[in-house]
Length: 406
Image (cartoon, rainbow, N blue to C red; front, side, top):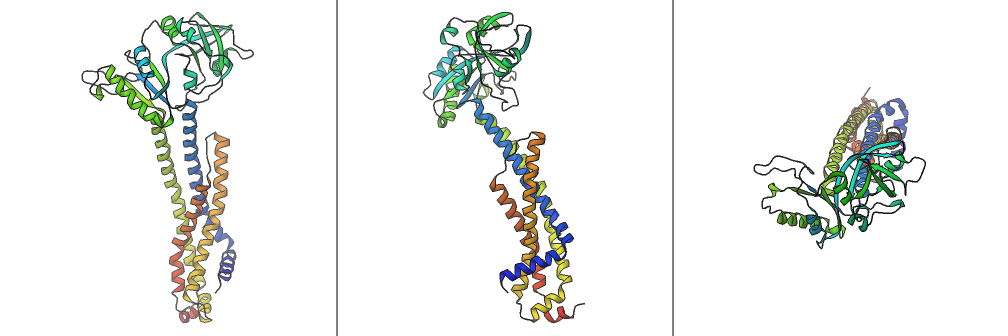
């Protein structure tokens, strides 16, 4: 029996009971659609995390005061809770060969007033390297200068959210705003960055010289952190190791548990979120796969019923020369066809659901050709696996007994 005849007979047998075939395919359709939608959600989440990492800057390493560890006799404290990070630490870090650029950081929150508008935002004290490290383009105006830092001048650069809030209808460059009732001249505005990797608004901040924030806003001499850019992307981990060694030597720390600082790379910071997204995707795919399993059981059930209904037909074909393998191939192909048709419809439904989730709920999704191929191959495999037993049962019928079957 030629393969084309086998396919034709299989399609006729399926179309003979359209409603039953459609109900049989329903489990496969739902299963494949669920798998594609879950993979799209997981891929979209990971892509969003990668995009957020890229938006943070180039080869970034953060050195923060304080530690999440706890040494003997020390109270537990998170990053930024200690005041042991100094300008000398920053200068020593900046001189490491693995470090391209570095900026000391001093953070504060303040009420900002411009005309009759006001806004509570974060004030980031930094140097002229900060925007380069963060790969942050200036939208209008200019950056703070080394002279502004040396003289602790009251100048600033506005993030996009602050710009839109305080100056909705005008260019703020050259304007004067008040931060904690001190007048600051606006040097420039920044291009929008959007949401950070922890859901924060990266554009809701004001950058000023770190010396100005230290002396005129906070009255301190220490810094909260150092933002570092490694010389190359392949040196990020090595730079982090060298910074850790340097800081332990400078702070005379022998036991890592006694660290009064922490060094973190963006990859490390995002690793937990990426792993959570991967775990959630696998969990949801496992649940979605149950639908495929149910669909496969449905295919087996229908094919067993079909074998019983067509016993005389099977006997007649075997009596006129059909071989055992021809009957096996015919019923196996019917099961695969049911599964493949269900898989194709499931792919269309899954793509539609993924796009609907993005448009309706705003969740990022990413449909890849690999996920479609995997889902379709899985559906075909379900048809082969669950269709083999009914096909083998049909092929094993005795022709004489089959012809006698009522």
